[in-house]
Length: 89
Image (cartoon, rainbow, N blue to C red; front, side, top):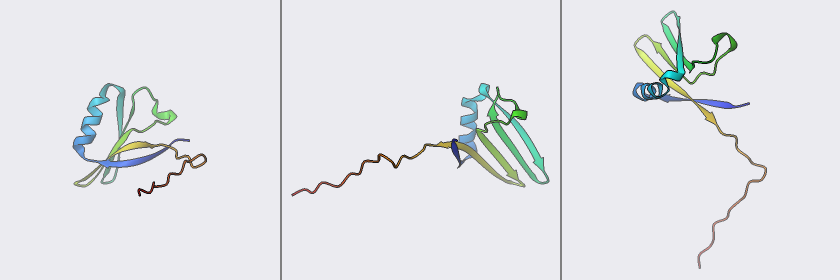
């Protein structure tokens, strides 16, 4: 199972990312009371099947938040090499 972390970015950074992937991404907006959330996901995925969100924006009143999802790489502790600082004489 892959793990992801959300990374908050500025609106400008999100726009650059979306422009780069523009033909391959689509979006869906959900509004609930005073909050609007826009999800960006690959265009070839069907929403009913669940989609892999790439980024999302949330707007509450006049405050905006923009996030991208970053894949976390697994850490391996089993065969970890340990290094020791070499003493200089």
